[in-house]
Length: 165
Image: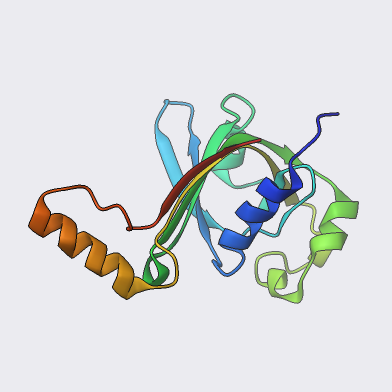
């Protein structure tokens, strides 16, 4: 088992904790990329993201042939953008489903954790890239304005980081 950098995993988790949906992008049987919104349920200590889904969703059948996926999260009001890539598999894990279950999920799975189509996606994070202008939108705007006037790249426009797990 690989050793995972808990600080890096926590950085990713903290960036998306208040972002309710991510756009989950897969490659279909025609080699076309398609996306749909999914809600992240957890990032575990091994760098796996967990999502609930139905095994009847067409995109889940593509994961076997094309497990490399991307999910992007955005909080434009805070100038935060995050792109995560990794390897996804569809799993039937009743124990994990019970652990992460919330009453809100009954909307999609009326039979609860006993719904025969209830499945989970485990996305093993390979890398994450984020752009974060921080909490001061004014500082970010000033840096962009200065760059526009001087013709030089902004130096205080925020943080751009790539994390590889």
